[in-house]
Length: 192
Picture 1 (cartoon, rainbow, N blue to C red):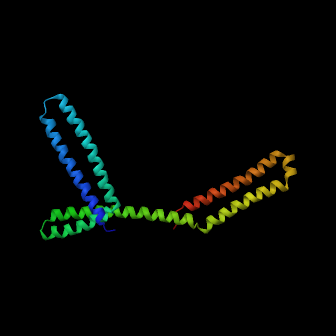
Picture 2: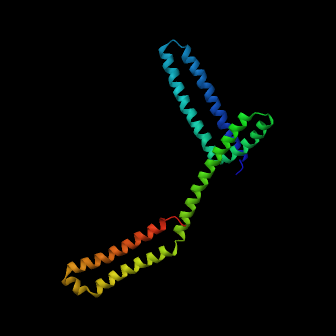
Picture 3: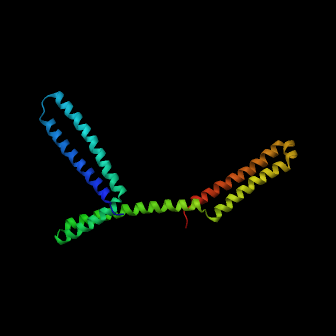
């Protein structure tokens, strides 16, 4: 995904805001170090804390822009061009550091892709379940229908001997529930 002009502008503005806040914090830190008045020091410290919160917000915005723009891919593209310059300048330490950064970015991309593939597979299995899951769900439905049929057909017997009715109907409903649980467990299995 290439970065649009609007995203590049947003990133540039966020980076400028972050750098500006860092400069202001450094200036406030110098003022705090030289200030002798306790009340003024307290006011400067409060201002510094406020600037630190603003800096955290700007850093979060930069991180969000990197994630939205597929930052790892852009990092790889930028680092490959830097690697060419490092190799031409005969600087093996810098080239090694760039290669390590590229490897880390590739590992993050691989992890992200594997997570997405797992989610897509789970969604596909929910939409189009395997035939075993469909068969188990149909078996559970038939078991519930059998429980209803037996309950209606043998109503006199079940009312005469309520313990037998409760056990029989409970067993059939439990079988249907167990079949549904088994079907859901089959659905959660990883495909081979």
